[in-house]
Length: 344
Image (cartoon, rainbow, N blue to C red; front, side):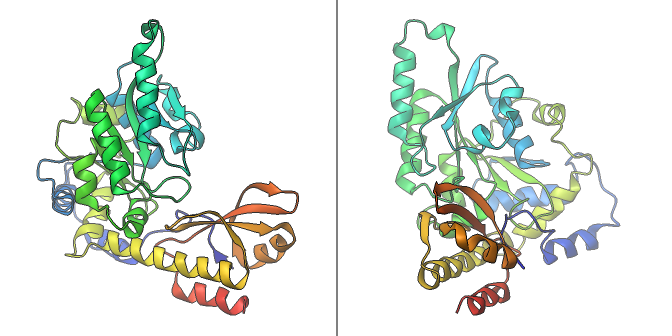
């Protein structure tokens, strides 16, 4: 069976695992003060062309979102996102658990549009009872989105300028960042570092066993950040484990992290061609990234399930279901060839 359920149902890339093995016997300081983490931070600064960046390694994506949002907001503030955002749908209310309301606006194929955010902010500030309401304190987006779609450079610039105008931080969730960058024609790490107040480079879904790298591109992270990360349960005592993994992912002149993203997207495009041209399935969402969504006849589901691991997304009508198929750094060309031969 070809496993396409998700991009985190596998272990760790062999090169990352090898580096963990090579460094395993070395004794280091804890809580991110080790030389692996220090080197990884420098490599990420160079990749982002952000020499002043402050970088922190956290355990996982949900912990990262809850921690960063809580640290950047005042107790009376909430976070603006689109209705399909991960923090609004698939994090079990982790942000609300910290005491901050998620302020969800209608999305456009998973994207948050600057004009909608501006209208929301203008309405808030014009309301005479605004002091009795949750104050919008930041804007959250994902790159790529939960639906596999991308923000264009212009859309990111519009959101960044809007946030700057209103004095709000723009936070970019990069759980699948490698795949978004691979599919984008005009957004790279330096661009993201220039436009975002803070973002994270996702490791868990992009070649690492676990861990995410939070980047404050211009510095200016909240005070006592390490203490706050620990308070949120997102700090590993053996943080070297995350640091060493990012050291492996970013050590080469052409970082392995970006290479893995490109390979996964190339295989996703082969999968897309197979499903649209041979099986004649219609895309449910037009995604250029490693997440592919198709409208599948219900009669085909049992056969597909015998050969492919995938996720049913939602019913489309009485006879069809939208399904998600996800390639990752661990998907192989041989697996795609197996499917191509199966569906000749």
